[in-house]
Amino acid sequence: MTICIREITLREIHLPLKEPFVISSGAVTTRRILLTELRDQDGAVAWSECPAGAAPNYSPETIDTAWLAITSWVAPRLLGRALAHPRDVHPILERDFRGHWMAKATLEMGAWGLAAERDGVSLARFIGGTRERIEVGISLGIEATPAALVAKARQALGHGYRKVKIKIKPGADVDYVGAAREALGPGAPLMADANNAYTLDDSDRLVQLDQFGLLMIEQPLAWDDLVRHAALQRRLATPICLDESITSLERAEDMVTLGAGRIINIKPGRVGGFAPSRAIHALCARHDVPVWCGGMLESGVGRAYNVALASLPGFTIPGDLSPSARYWERDVVTPEWTMAPDGTMTVPRDRPGLGVAVDIDRVDDLTVRRETLTAP
Ligand code: OSB
Ligand code: MG
Image (tube, rainbow, N blue to C red):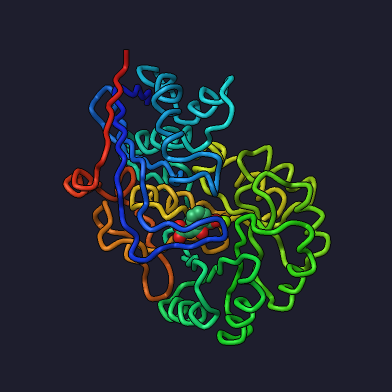
């Protein structure tokens, strides 16, 4: 079924986190979130979310660069254009257009959401998802003391979470991870995420983490560096998982070729959308590289896309897909995303499109800027 996007409304909403989220490169207290609403020629609507943050400390993109890129270059390529399938969007956006992966992904994913909506099937089914329930992990920010981290991690396992990710940085690493391993026991599914906080000069320190039997260490070195990750992986027993470094299918191929990591955290926004996410998922399946779905503190809109993606068969490791209540007093969707006591989340396979409805009144209350673009 051909889709033709007639109108796109961008909104910036401010959504306060229940508690600040601290990673090695910065802290977030209130998420500034860019939501888009795509409307096609017949009035069908799909919402999507840009995962970019307020500052360029995770990716070079921010909500402000994404707003500029979407309004200036991404939307004009799509508005009024007949699209036979949402897979056609990615090549249209890549031609002579470098970077801006999150800006591109916002509308690329929106096109998949819109197509699923039009077909009357769930986004999960539309993209080939097979799981009815997905396993949920939690990402814990850096705490003031190892004891504070232990309390949070213990509570998370008590809630049923299937994986606990501990954010680390120099000065908050071996002691923190060691305390968690000691308190939670040898079988607890623990991993660490450094968000680029180390260099190869820190290799001895990172090798010390091997003793804790982590599932993986995520992105220890620079965001755009595969070569040094390969050198580090040769010294580490713990698998390296790449996050920031994987911005495309080609970077995932490079990781495999170079041995720069053994696991990939796929965030659809970071790689330009669902088409490249599915291609990375297929590549990883061919090479026995496990994948899992990362998170960017998304609202319930972005979470819908992540949940659908995580229902693909190759997503064998619990994702950073916490329920709405971990982040927000109240989410912007109904129903909110919830987690069962066994640490799983239901994939809304029997509801069309995203499977959740956007609470327009709530979004209106939170909106601080808005712009509507229409087809020429
Ligand atoms: O590195 O995975 C990351 C949040 C913001 C920026 C980067 C990261 C994260 C998380 C949060 O770990 C995961 C979540 O959404 O719960
Ligand atoms: Mg990460």
